[in-house]
Image 1 (cartoon, helix red, strand yellow):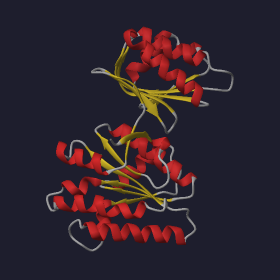
Image 2 (cartoon, helix red, strand yellow):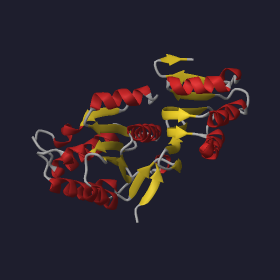
Image 3 (tube, helix red, strand yellow):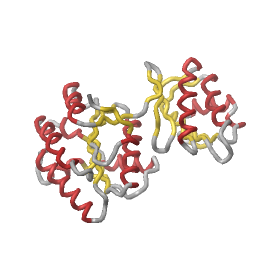
Image 4 (cartoon, helix red, strand yellow):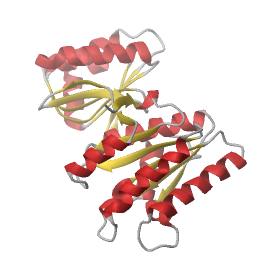
Length: 281
């Protein structure tokens, strides 16, 4: 059975699969992966279908300069269509170059969208995932292969999960039909999506308690929260009010959520700062 691993527990030499439908979660995992790779001295490259957009999004999340984002079609060199052998050879060259330049190794993320293109031979995906395995043997090469659930059928997603020794995923504190609460890595804290009322306030309490334990300042991402009631808002304010001196809670949210928190008394909590989309308070 493939192990599910939080991104902060990936080790050098891991070959991990990320299947996602939530773009925010994908960006958070990539940001944490890049930050950890650079901290241990790896050259870091993200191969992406939308290279400029990905780079901008990662920088916006606070990832330091120094990582490379490259269009994914450069993986097959001068060829007009994806070719597994060419891709593995290119990655091997990049690994050798990274070590030669004084890096500990090479860490990459690869958007596997190329395999869903009309000109791609589905067999090339199978060959690539098998052949690339040899690069991981000495722990110098680390990779996350990204699979967008909207681009691949269930059979391909199942194959991807089976051939990767690791499946990377967010740490989820609560998930049901209307609410998802998970760990956010960059910046560190908690991300909440959906609708949140007093009946699920305990799940939020537990998630924030772990953030208080793990993080100096707590970043609460409510960008994808559509509704919050007074009971759940009170949990946020109590947690912020209970922080020791010099620690802060930063809440990122939309204007409707900001209004509810303001009515609940956010202005009376010195440790609480709200960053509102299209404005700042």
